[in-house]
Length: 194
Image (cartoon, rainbow, N blue to C red; front, side, top):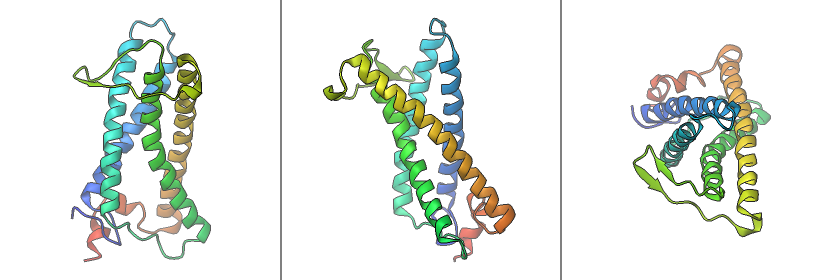
């Protein structure tokens, strides 16, 4: 069962979910670790280059995941959900998708705005051009600071949304006792639609 149905997710959506969940959790922990290091740490340059490289993988996977999501039906929300819970579920997913794109893009813009002009070479193989940075943001250093701030606050917002997302999944599983969590670990609910 590769594709989604109205009752559950297919293997592709489940794989996207868990691969990206692990990558995002790793990138958030990695980013927090890097920013805790002193600025003269000799490993810092290598760590930032690796962080940028993985960020481009996340951006590519986010684009593929969104494409797959748009080409497949979304499983229905469980019956009996309060309208505010339904709204929260939709807004939460929109927020997560937005941040899947915003985090790598603000990182790319931060690197592009840097007055140091350090090239980005994904995994030391694929050169990536800098993005044009709007002049309205001031000097390169001011633009870099602006995108650095967006990237940092985006990370904290993403962490908060992830915790809410996990809490909601467990609420569905342990309190509401519906299939919401089951359908993200198994294709059985999706096959029930056939």
